[in-house]
Length: 158
Image (tube, rainbow, N blue to C red; front, side):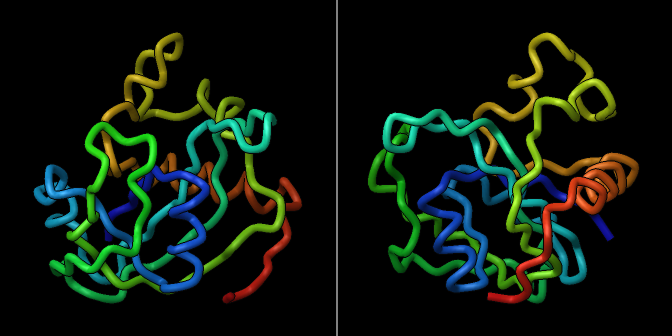
């Protein structure tokens, strides 16, 4: 089993919740090709400005992969704010929710303890330009433990 940090935005988070699907742009097909059923996905929302409010980077859910990667070019994801607008995120896996948190976990306070982030001062470089990245089991468990103690509350399978 592998553990993945899946990097997305608010608009695509809604798609993930509604459709139980994770998708990446064409240029990330080699990464998603490594994903297998049973793998765990942490959904990471990037920092964005929503209605004049800056929302800090945060982790909002844990999902389990339930399919092999497949290609579907139906436009369901938003490419707003991406390098190449019009991106369809055609490489996908079906997923099922394990835990969806009512209160997201802020990401920045985790940085000092995460092993996959080796440059703590320029931590965003470990995520920039990626749709997803594999993380060590220790980091996954640390994040899960923090989510549980954070009191995020589990909102079930929406």
